[in-house]
Image 1: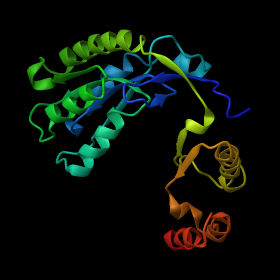
Image 2: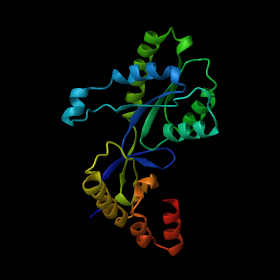
Image 3: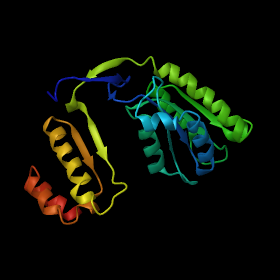
Image 4: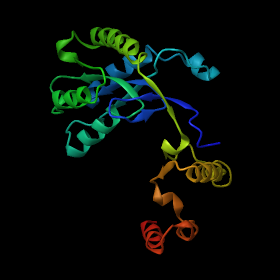
Length: 225
C-alpha cells in the first residue's frame, strides 16, 4: 500500500517532485532579515495555522543567510534551499551593500525554472516600501506557482529529514521512538530517511551498528557517535 503513488506532487522542471509548493522569501544578509520577516508575516494567518486548515494559495516561508560575510558553503546552502523540490518561487531580499552575490544566486534559481525576483532595500525606498513591494511580488509568484504541473509520487520517492527540537525528559521514551518506528515503516517502503545529529545517539550506537547493512557501515556509525 505504501508504494502506491498516492501523493499528488508538484513536478519541477528538473524532474524532481515536491510535496509542497511554497514561496521562499530569502534574505541575503542579517541586516535584511527584518524586512523578509515583515513580508512573510503579511501572509501568515496564525488562526488558520492553529486550526490546521491550509488555504489554497501556496504557503510563504522565511529562509536566509544570517551572517554578514558569505562564503562558498553559505552560497551552496542558499542554492540548495532556494531550488529545493518543495519551493515553487523565490523572492530574494538584499540590503544592497552586502557581499553576497545575489545576481549569481538569482541566475541559479532562474535556471531551475522557478520564478524569482530580487528586492534591494537601499534601492526600494527603505523598510516599509520594500515590504509592500515584497508582498506584491509574492502574490505574483503565488499565482504562477499555483499553475505548477502535478504528478503522482510514491512513498519510495520521498527523502525525509528530521531535526531535534523541543526535547524534554520524556522525548527518549515518547517522540523519539515514535519517529524511529515511522522511519522503519518509510524505509521499508523504499523512502530515504535522514538523521544527522549523531550526538543524539549516545548510548544507542550499538543498536544502530547492529542494524547496519554492512559491518563497515556499523563501525562507521559507532565511530561517528
